[in-house]
Image (cartoon, rainbow over all chains, first blue to last red; front, side, top):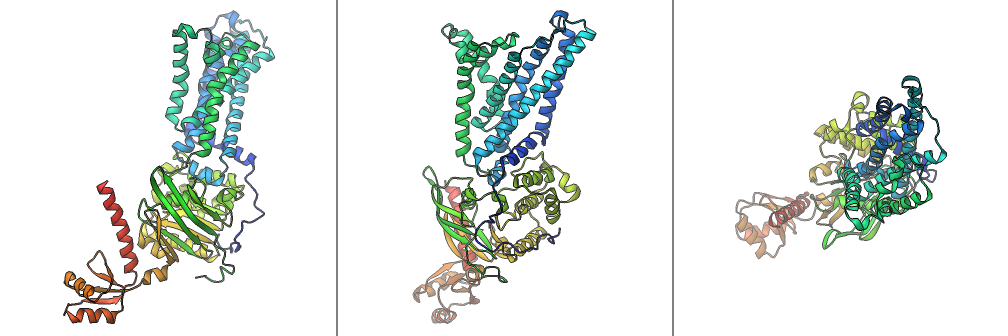
Length: 268
Length: 311
C-alpha cells in the first residue's frame, strides 16, 4: 500500500473543474458492451448463443430431407434458438444492475439514467444484430455443406424481405427482453415471465373461441407465426406485429423506462 | 479549523439544506442540514437506521428527496458533468458483481470516467490490491478487501470530494489506521471528506468535524475538539442515588451516563459544594471530556434499540 501517487494538491475552489466534460455516450456504450461479456453469466450466454446456432445448423444438415436443405431453411433453423436466448441478454443487461446492486455505482457515475438506459438498449441491439449476422453466415456454411455432403437442394434463394424479417423479429425479441427486465428489475422473475406469460397467453387465445379472430393482433406468437413457416411477412402480418408488439414490447418498455428513471437505487 | 492553507476560501464543498425523506408516514430523514468544508474530514455519526445512508443517497441523486436540497461543489449532484471526476462515492462496498475481478470493476469505472488504464493499476497499488489480488473475483474478497476496492474506486477519478458510507466496516485495526492516514492525507491536500459511521470511537480517530444524526434529525454539529470537550463536569460516587439527590437539591441539571456517573452542567466547585453539604462521597470529579457526547450517542443508540424491541 502506498499513497505516493496521491500527493498533488487538489483544486481549492468550490466549483467543479470546467475542463471535465460529461461522460460521452460512446463511453457509456463501450462500458455497457463490456459488461455484457465480463461476467461468467454474460460470457456463457453469448457463447451458448454461438454454440447452439452452430449445433442447430449441424443437426438440421443431417436431419432434414435433401430437398429441404436450402439457405432459407438453414437461416430459419437458427431463428428459434436465437429467439429464445437473445432476449435473455436484454433482460440481464438491465436486471443485474439491481440484482447485483451494481446500479449503485453505475448511477452515481452517470446520474442521467435515461442515458444509461439508451446505452444499454443500443448495446444489446448491437450484439443481437451481430448474432443474427453470424447466424446468417453460419447458415451459408451449412448450405455449402448440404450441397457437398448431403446432395441437398442448395438453393440460395433468400430475399431481402426474408433477411429483414429475421433481423427485425430478433431485435423485437431483444427489445422485449429489455422491456421485461426494466419492468420487473429482477433477473429470475423477468426471465420466467418473459417465457411463461406469452406462452400462457397463446394458450388462452387458442382455447377461447372468441379470441381466434383478434388473436394475431393480441398475441405475439400468432403474429410472428408465418415467419416460422418460412414465408416472407406481408404488410398485414407486420400490422399484426405492430399491434401485438405495442402490447408486448412498447407498453412494458415505456412503463419500464419510467420505473428505471424514478426508482430509488438502494444497496439493501 | 483549516489545515495548512487548505481553505483559503471558505466555500463549503458539500451543502445539505433541510433534506427530508418520507416513506409513507415514516420519516427516515427529517430536515437535515450540514456542511462539509475542504481540508477537513467530516464524520457523519449515528446509530444504524438513523438516516445516514438515506441522506447520502439523496446527496448523490440515487434517492429522490421528499424536501430540501443538497449541492456538491455548488451544484446538485445530477448536474455535475462526469461526477466521478469530482466526487468519489462509496455507498456499499459489497454492491459489486461477485463475478467481476477487482481490476475489472475499476476498469469499468475508468472507462466510464474516461481515464487511462494506468490509473486502475495506480489505485490498486494505493489500496494494496495490485497483482494477483486484483485478479481475484470480488465474490471471493473479504469485506475489508471490498472496502479497499471501494476506496480505490472512489479515488479513481482524482476527485476533490469523497463521500463514503461506513468505509471502515470490515477493516481490521491496521486497515482502519491505514484509512485514517489516507483520508487525513486527502484532506491535507485540500480535499473534502464526508464519511459515515455508527461507531463513535472509529470516527473519533478519523474525523476533524462531527455531524451526529439520530432518528433522522441532526443532534450535534461541531468540531470534534469542541464536541468531545463537551460541556459540564463529570461526577461519580459509590452511592449514585444520594449523589443525584444532592445535585437535585442544589438545583443543578445533569444527565446520567451509562456507567453510573453524572455529567453536570456546572463547575467542579459548585458540585463539590453541593455534595459536601450532604456528605455524599465523591470518587471522581473532572471535566466531562467527551463523556457528554458519548452519553448522548449511547442514549440515541439505546433508544433505537429499545424501540426495535417494543415494536
